[in-house]
Length: 65
Image 1: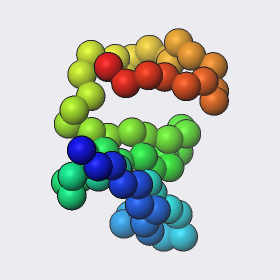
Image 2: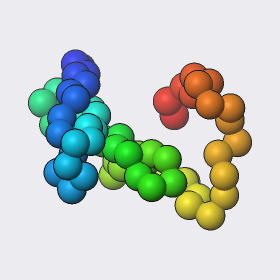
Image 3: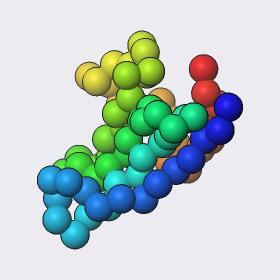
Image 4: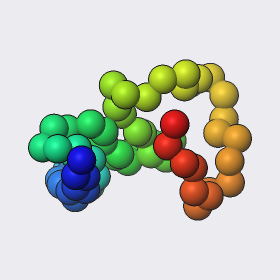
């Protein structure tokens, strides 16, 4: 299994960048700027509550599930 991260131009925010995560040549997640901070998008994320604040400090490493 191979992973690749790509920094790309944000398609809806000119002058901003986004990070794409690819696994074995298939797009699996995106991280991009948002007015409230950042957004992480992936169809592989589960059990995520949008109503609550994150329970971890900034910069803390979170192991994958």
